[in-house]
Each structure stands twice: as structure tokens, then as C-alpha cells.
Image: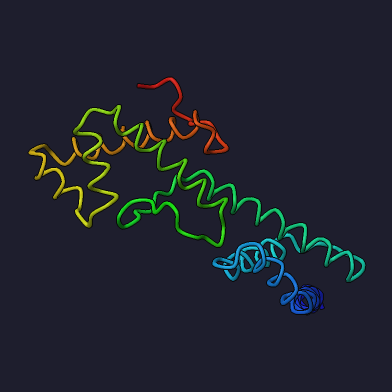
Length: 184
């Protein structure tokens, strides 16, 4: 009889999850369409691990959406913490019509800040960064091209990336301050 009770609790939890699965997935799809499925799985895993003691279905739904909101917030924080530079063939196209003028303006500001920072860096650091982000070259190939060791090329990339993070934070283009502030 001891094993029947946990099995009934698992079945009840599974039924509740099934009732709200589509609604939670829809909520996540509107806010993070590319990763909605993965986030939904994370939500249901957290809900299943917590096995909340919700007396009504409405309370369970509210709990599931609270978890979904926290998972979504965590996802956006993780994305914001990473600086993502996407090479644009031919540079930033000005004057083209865009579906999202705000994104175009932000991209332009980011590109200007990155170019200004790269211009202030020692040439070898900037070259490693440019080669790595705009070509298919591996760090080994970049090191050979520069006539330095692999570790030197990796170190130059690390330093360039840190300086770029700091420059973007100083320009107000990221929401967080770099953890390496003060190190040079």
C-alpha cells in the first residue's frame, strides 16, 4: 500500500502537467520562440522535482506559470550576459529598410563601439579578434598566420573579448558590468 500512494501522486502530477502543457508552451513560444520547447522541458522538470502540493488546479496553473516566468527570465539573463557578435557580410548596411528600426539602431551603435575599441587595441589583438569572428580560421591557423604560439593567439582573443565587453558596458550597450573590471 505504501507504493500505491506515491504512484497516485505521480499520476496526478502528470495529469496536471498534461492539462497545462500547451498553455505554458504557448506562453514561452511568444517570448522565446526559438528555444520554447527546451524552456518548457526545463519548466516541467522543475515542477516535477518540486512536486507542489497545490489544492486546486488553478493554484497549480499559477505555480507552473510562476516557474515558467522564472525560467524565461533566467534564459534572457544568460543571453544578455553573452556578447554575441554576428558578422555582417559587407558591414552594416545603412539606409536599408528594416522590420525593426530599434534593432538596426542598436546594431549600428554596437558596431561603432566595437570598431572604436578594436582601433584602440594593439594590432595583433584586434587582428585575432577580426580573424576569429569574420573567417572560418581556427585558433591554430590564426596563430600560424601571426607566427605565434596557440596559447598566445588564445590569450590575445581573451584580452580582446574582455576589452570589448568593458567597452560595450561603458557605452551602455549591455545590462551588466564586466566581472573583470579593473584588470588590464
